[in-house]
Image: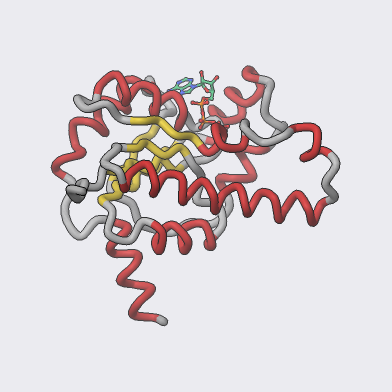
Length: 190
Ligand SMILES: Nc1ncnc2c1ncn2[C@@H]1O[C@H](COP(=O)(O)OP(=O)(O)OP(=O)(O)O)[C@@H](O)[C@H]1O
């Protein structure tokens, strides 16, 4: 069988309500190829709600870790067969990035940090009503990997506007990309 060229990955990383899903959807309409938008919520949404509710705290933590590890590999599987994928996912724990750096080694990943002011995050959280109060604020304080290829701020801009900026700058992102820099930094310290 002919070898298939790998697809590309755009990883939208930002706290809850920062606008990752909205940008992901907008990107599909703008990027010229048939990209996939694969949010981690899409994988979580396939899981049995009834039996998830029966788990104790330790069981929930283990199940969430399994889900996220599976998400990383599902994206790699799609991309390995030539599909371009927009990930919609928060790098909120160091292990998530560590695992992705291994699983997506050799893949073209553009890491996009999605910022939003805390007051606006809180306003969106209140108005959507389907996220626990304070979730976004708790996520803005946690783990920071301190590197990215692009940064967009949705505080005063529409998702479509941010998506246009990402699409317009995608091919101009310099090498090595953030994932390559982060991988090299880990290799130096290990
Ligand atoms: N640029 C924007 N300006 C104003 N409101 C926005 C913007 N982007 C998203 N929103 C609104 O904020 C809410 C959350 O948006 P979205 O689902 O895209 O965020 P998210 O980062 O994917 O959140 P989560 O991680 O919780 O799924 C939605 O109600 C959406 O309409």
